[in-house]
Image (cartoon, rainbow, N blue to C red; front, side, top):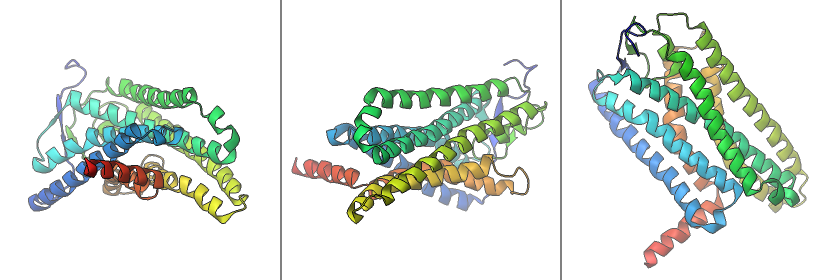
Length: 310
């Protein structure tokens, strides 16, 4: 990138205005959360790999979700921890652009994976006799790979529009990572196209998939209510409740941040909301699935029991 395109080579992430003591406290706390995120999601992936009883479409998609959550956290949290220790430590221009691109890639991919998982539950409950035919391994692999490819390509579009912008006013990013809307505020050129694409992308990636999830679960609810036995209803609902919790957490925060009103919502509030979105969501997802899913809990007990026996 030539000097005629940008006059700065690094950015400073402002993060949160806190006292040194509070920064150290948050460093320890967030480090623990980050560790739990890696361990929790890594455990989910490991259990699905080692137990053949979990080699089903539902857990195949769950393993992809866990991988995305690991990547999601690894992209933003380490830089945030560095800034808590040293608030004035800069991030390079290339590093900042890479972080923006990866964040968008993983966020969009997770949106699409949640849609695919809702479709899997829809087929399992509404068309149980045709489930193995509809959700073949070829179909599942295609849907998972397509989610990753679309996430990569849409993030690449935003990156291509972002790279030519000159940055010459300030290098201070009012965020704890290189979030695209915070970066656009530093550009000394017209960013209307970029902002329009961010909003259009958010609407298409968030509202569209979220609407399809709502329709899927409306059909699922209708099918569950038609089940005669109470035990059958509870079993059917238990397979969907974990996914509903994850969908609510992910889409709820994302829609408020990127599709909600552009004015009237304090920037600091959205910053804290994105902190929840990028730090706590990936940590909570494995807890939600393990605590509310008997298959995962039973597999974990068997693995732990085998290790004790050895």
